[in-house]
Amino acid sequence: MHQEDACLVSSGTLAGQLALRLFEEMPLGHTPGTHPALYRLETRSSAGLFDEWLSQLHKALAQQPQSHWVLLCNSVDPLFAREVRFDWLADLPTDRTFTLLVDDSHGIGLLGPDGGGIGSVLSMPPHIELVVVASLNKALGLPGGVIAGPRHHLEQLRQHPVYNGASPLGPAWLHAFLQSKALYQHQRLRLQDNVRRFMESAPTSFVYRHTEPLPVFAFNQHELVAALAARQILVPSFHYPTTADPLITRLVLTSAHTDHDLDQLVSGL
Image (cartoon, rainbow, N blue to C red; front, side, top):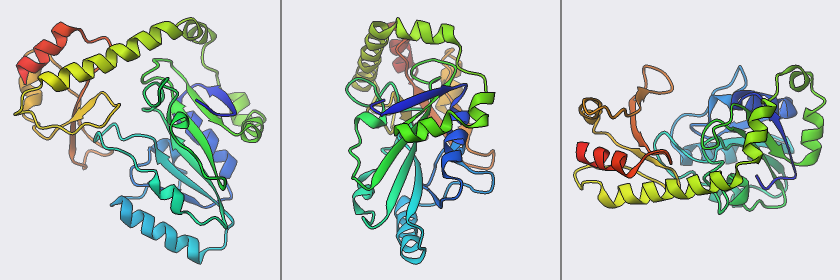
């Protein structure tokens, strides 16, 4: 993860909630769409457009005297297959210090040349520190979570009663993971091949949104869900984050999909 230190916990949500314990007395700024794992009980992620949120943040920084702020965001947008911006970090005032707390659940295993996640692709200015939390149960397929960042933060977390009282990620899973580096690399390349092959063969009538390196293709032709299901092809389609929100429909490719699977998908589309 390209960080100074890390600790493992039993889930990504616990990783996020435990990391928040480091910053209980500090102001938080949630970018729009931040995963609920990074909510405090009394807060909710900002809604609306990112540029509007950024404008409000700079107004708050000018009006409030706190010297350290914690800004929270996702590393990627797997729901809508959109790029997450980080260029705004360069414009944060240098007379303050910041922690950028990133949920990298859908980035770890995909982002960077070795799949090391957001820490391998972000270059942080001196007045901003990076803390990363993630579920390991996405690209890596491990039933647990991780917190990574500066060593002094991780040493503090290891003394916290919530960390000491929680179940760890099972040792057998970790042993298998440590023995599987070559397999993970092979499957990562296989996934990239599947994404490339699908994009080359998808019919022009299928209009989608896709952002590298996510194996996700978001689309609004919701009627395709039933048509694909009739061919025994299941497509994620649900309202999120509440049942009152718009329907989100996506194709999600994996390294387990075969050439035959992709041919069947393209034929169904």
